[in-house]
Length: 362
Image (cartoon, rainbow, N blue to C red; front, side, top):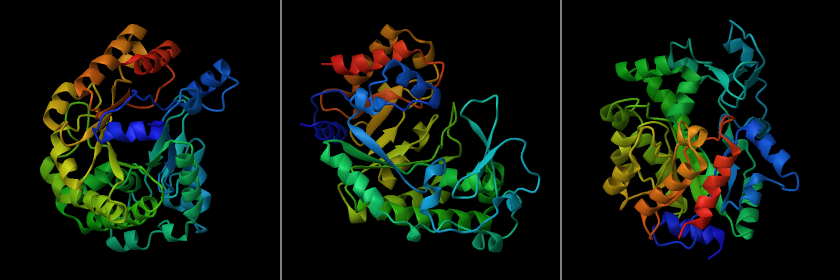
């Protein structure tokens, strides 16, 4: 099997030959890698990741994709009358991302619909028009990745819930949902319709995995009750998944949620997900989650970036990788990897220990 075939067989729980490795580095860690390995084109190539990422034009932090949409001639500052203290980037949804000199690569988000009080304002908002995007350029990228024997992962996270609250503000949106306000329905429906369109486009390409997701977990519980999730978000997520699988039934659906998402896993499975990420170990017990759901879905993650990667020893990292892969067993079902971005405080020795553990696993 080539790397793509090995990875997909693992996710389909049909066995695998090698435990794959993968992670995302924050900007300062990318710079550190480049200093250590100036000869390498990328850390993905150097560490032989079995996939490459294609970023959805609807992903809020993909500012480089802003120019792909038809020109709207919007002065986004009009939605923020109080202004800003630091430099700001506006994403394609109109959300303002304000830099802070004390927070490295993290930004503060400001919400353009914070003060909206009518459905009409939502209807008349300058929404991004994805029908004007030339998706052929993404198709070219997908074909190129597949030709190298690698899997195509489409990064389409912040699919519905997160995009909605980024635009409206979490407090406002939660209140709208609790009160059954029509503003919540219309906002979520518009975002869902646009997500379905993009999901169909990516499913029609040589995409192997469609990465959806919205953070629905906090450190110790879910961000909303199962009843609220079933009412407001699960049917809309299912629409997006159904749209993709109606075009390509073989595409795998990965779903990301930080925090303790355990209580909503049955709803996610019912919606049609195939892979759950990241099974954050500070919040979820992988052994129990696997015992309860490992015959229905596969997993990505399980190596903590809150505790183990920054504060553990290289041997502790290796031991945890082996333990989790042993739990999944020979049929696979776990792409064992860090649960989130590798941040500046993670020692480089722990990154190398993680990769070595994957390569040494038998």
